[in-house]
Structure formats: C-alpha cells, structure tokens
Length: 407
Image (cartoon, rainbow, N blue to C red; front, side):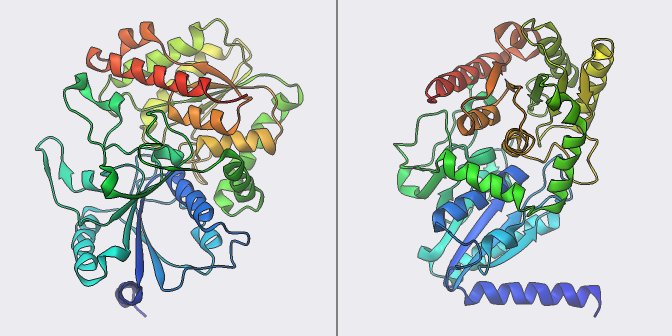
C-alpha cells in the first residue's frame, strides 16, 4: 500500500470516528508539560482506579499537537494510549501551515454538523487557539466556532482564564482579555497567581493526586525516551548525590523570545544572577531550558558559565546532551524535580524561582528550597524599561502565592 493511500485511509477512518461520535473533545496541546497537564486532568476528571478499565461511550478525543521552539517536528509526545486506555482518540500533528489551514474548516464542519452542546474545546489558556489564526499586529483573527470551553492550565496546570499573561504586555498599553464566566464550561488547575479560582469556579487538582500520577508515569516507564533521559541524569549526578553536595536547578525563561530584551542581555542577566549572588553555593548546576526558548541562547549561557566555573570545582551540565532522546528543554520541570527527589533521593536541591514553573514545583514539594530571581536591579539593567514593572509585578505575585503554601 502506497504512502498516499495509507494517509488517505487514516484521514477517512478519522473522519468516520468523528462523525459517529456523540461527544467530541478537541484538545489543543504543544509542549510536553501541557500534554502531561491534560493527561493529569483526564485521569483526575475520570477518577480512574485502573487506567485501562474505563472509556467514555461514543466519545472521541481529537488531540491537536502544535510545535514549539524546542520541538518543531513534534517528536516528544506523551504516552496517551497508556493513560486513555480504551478511550477512542485521534492524534494530529499540526506541524505545517498547510495543516493549520486544513484544521480551520474542520472546526466549522464539526460545529455545523454535530450537536453544539456536545462539542468541547480544551485549551491551556483563554483564546490560545485564536492566536494561531490571527495577527496581533493587524488585530485580525479568524472566528473560532463557539465550542464549550474547558481550561486545563497554562504550562503545567496554571490557571490562565486570560488571553495573555500580564507580564508579557508592553507598558500596560494593551489590556488583557478575560474569559466571561458564562463562556467557560469547566476549568481545572493545580496552582494560580491571579486569585481567580473562586470567580471561575475552577476545580483544584490537589498536589497528592498529581504527585501520585507523576511518580506512576515515571516508575512505570510509560515513555521510554523520557526514561532514558532521566537515567542519563542519574549517571551525572550519582557522585554529587552520594556526597550530599548542593545541586542548583536554574530554569531559563523567554525574555529574548518575547522581545523583552536582547539575547545577550538575557544571557548576561542570568550570568550575573548565578555568579554574583553570594548566598548561592553549589557544586552542580543544572540548566533547565524553557521549551519556548532558543537553543543558541541556552548554549551561549552554558559555555559562559562552564568557562567561569571550571576553576571553582562546579560542574555545569550541558542541557542539550540528551537531545537524541528527550532534551531537558522538553522535560517538564515538575518531572525533573520529582525524579531527583523520589527516585534519586537527592536531599540538597536549590531551585531558582524564575517563573511560574518554579511555583508549580514548590506547590507540589513545599520543602524544596527556592532562590528568587531576578529583582529590580538586574531587571532595570538588562530588560527593556517597558516590561520591567510587569516583571516585578509577576515576581511579587509569585512570592505572595508561595507564602500561602503551607509548609
């Protein structure tokens, strides 16, 4: 059977499944963290005791995978089959402009041919899918059918009933758009910083449930490539763990990619933070690149730090050493920390609090030590002034959220 015939058959079979279904869930995901966030929500929502024992009758899930900077070819995909069990679902990689344009009329076809009350659009944040079919510069967006919206959290389960985080809005000129409560069918989250969980009646997925799920996902080796990458960490960390030396985890963010500063400025800000903060004493530095950050920036940071630390007996791990399996860029910070704490039994970890991902980890692991980044002095030195106040507000919100975590 030729490639074209196979593709045609797959498309035909998929359309047949869609039009036979009485209930349709369209799920939009990108990074590994958002995929894992959905699977956590799915398992929580269905209250599964045996992940292979139940499925929703005449229901189908359509997963739309969109590329990110660290995974443009969408190679790193969670083990959906293991978690969804017998549930009918379709995976579709939207890895080209042609495929993106193809999806748009299918949205409308589903909307006008199926019962509108049984079509659900799952998104990480409000209007996430809308941004893919429009231009902020021209303020023009193609209309998306009014499906029932379910939010399951930006990144890894961060409640985001807003079209754009406030810290990414230049000079507060543009105003963030919040979803109207009447337009939100359901919401799930693990943590949030805007304090909107009561307004939107978002359902909290508790830390105990999430920790159990992450431990199960790792221990049962649902994703072989993920297991290999985590095992590689074990090789490098073994000596440091035995001697109980300090391991510092530094998650990068996207100042350069979101045009809040130049590439060199972001690298220099990280370098200053890591080398001039006197209370930071560690033996092993693990750089965890943001999935939306560029490789050239993170490599430049790695080389600069490696050169600086070579005479100080501090080991800096190349964050792209395991790229043939799953790059550290694509492994969620929550998974890395879970593995270090529960599988390698690392006792001496310091985590830089650079973004909401660190807040997520702190919520799951209240005992972990945090070091806040970056502060007014560094921000004013390296970040464009039109974004400084917004970033300072973000840091304040994260600190306030952390204070509310019970130790």
